[in-house]
Amino acid sequence: MTIPARRALQYEFELSVDGGGALEEYLDGLFHALPLATSPEPVPWRLKPVDGTDKTGWELMVGEECQSRAESAERLVHDVVHQLNAIAIPGWDGVVCHAGGVTRGALGVVLPADMESGKTTLTAGLVRAGFGYLTDEGVAFHRGGRLIEPYAKPLSIDPGSQFLFPELEPDAPLANDEYKTMQWQVPPRAFREGAVGAPCDVGVIVFPNYEEGARSELVPVRPAEALVEMAKNTFSFNTDSRAALDELVVIVRAVPSYRLTVGSLDEAVGIIEELTADV
Amino acid sequence: MSEPAVGVDENFVPARGDAVYTVELDGEAVLLDEEANRLHLLNHTATLLWTLFDGHASLGELARELAAHLGGRDEIVLVDIVAITRRLADEGLLAP
Image 1 (tube, chains in turn orange, purple):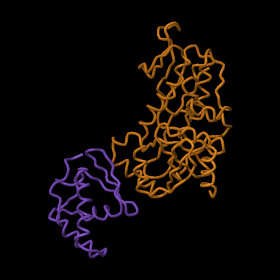
Image 2 (tube, rainbow over the protein chains, first blue to last red):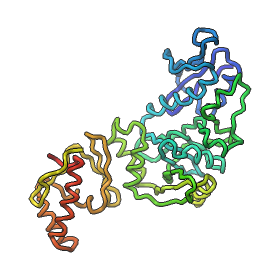
Image 3 (cartoon, rainbow over the protein chains, first blue to last red):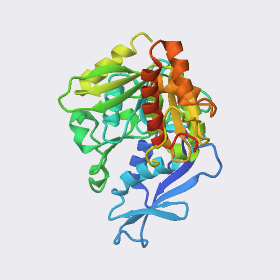
Image 4 (cartoon, rainbow over the protein chains, first blue to last red):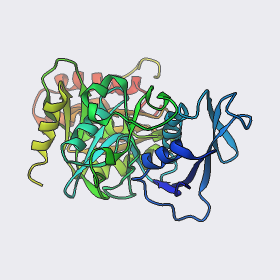
């Protein structure tokens, strides 16, 4: 089979695996929620044996450059997902916040947070509860407004959160389990068909922070405080900080912001369901 | 961060730094120091003061103006705004 070329934000790529087979099919499924590419020349991504055999390991080629190597092709699945983030996010012509994103109806919910704040976990919990999936990594805003462009990559669920989602454990007929040892890469259709949300305006911003044993609670955040928090969580903010700040001001002026202490996933999901119930 | 501010007293004439970009939201300012690439969040009082820094009025004059506007004694207002101004100067946000 040939994996159709896909678009990740504004970056178009065409992935292939030497020898094809189950791994190629698996990767095709991982990225199924990304739109099809429209460019006649997407960037070729290729998993190939280092020396033409599979004796000395595999490498991920992006164009003509080797991005990473591993002992097995399956091990490179993690690298494919994260390398795509590293290329697609800085290439977006606008502000991208390090955030999860979900939809409820026409309302976008943005969940900006540092790494290890439970961003993907909360995003996954909300999608499981029926919210539409936009991204678990980078919320991309179109310039001059509040419109979010979905970046529906597979959700990257860390080992520490996997017990919360036993139904999502990948189970692909691959040569080994190394494709899921570092993280589970979970395509949105593993939740249900049609789990991906459409482009929409952000309607509320929630800054989640996981605190073990804490009571989950939601506290309003002042717009100026929200602006600083959003800026801290904006990719490449320093590249053109004034322009980025102006983009973010439009957003925080228009929508309410909250800080969410997450003590338990179910409580936190319930709070956001209640917050967005009137949509 | 700059050296601790010295000479910030009632005769000091503050001006906003050229490299500082200001955004105000609901009476609170977010300052972007474009040289240091740092953000600063000011409370309402500091924001009000920041907007009055024009490179002409001294802190003594500003204290009298604010005291008349807000109510309160000039010398008490002066103590507060000198402290705020020193912090802003320490952060490198004022013009040299």
